[in-house]
Length: 311
Image (cartoon, rainbow, N blue to C red; front, side, top):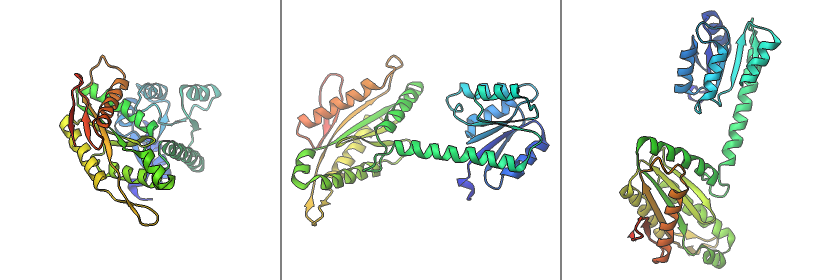
């Protein structure tokens, strides 16, 4: 397995011998991170977010139970599975660890086959859950993220923009006269059109933080963190023009064309507006303005109701 594709394990133990033993058992298959005390473990977990943590219970200062409790309090680390490694082979200790949220409990002395079997089992389970989650957030037709994924990202970026007093822009893109296109060319060709427009939207994004999704039906959304009105209008107009110039052939080779209307809302969110619902609604109002004013155009939401558009 290539290094960059290895899942990572954070081994937390104050005994170098135990760290060496576990590392030898697991290093061929997994990327190994090491912490020798509780505070160091919490820091590495936050910085690196390993896929699994193997945690000794008995450590000076901050024991394993305290480390686990601290990890569970953080949004960033609460989902990391933790396996306790300990010499305390009692039913009460095992129950306590599992109650706190550990996924497994391995007693010392360490047996390589036991460690490998249990770690591999948890890693397979982790990858299966990630695959299920990934599939549940992908639109089957366009292979773009779906509305569920977009809503999750919207909430994250909304909170980040509030904390950083940063700009956040949202584009809602609607295919003009999509029903008529379906009626004229058939639903399979309508699917072809959706995939083509989705492809143009996806290609317009240049940064890892930008998000595009199929919002539903013939609508697509783009979320642009740290982007003001001018930047959002540039992206929107580039998409509008690319789709206007796009030729989508039918199965028999007949060329077809379409256009889109785009609504934009660009803001620096304020703390008092705790939800992004209004932010999204205002982008929807801008889209409605673009449709009413002739379609195939970009309109920006203005609080006073005035029109700011390019076409």
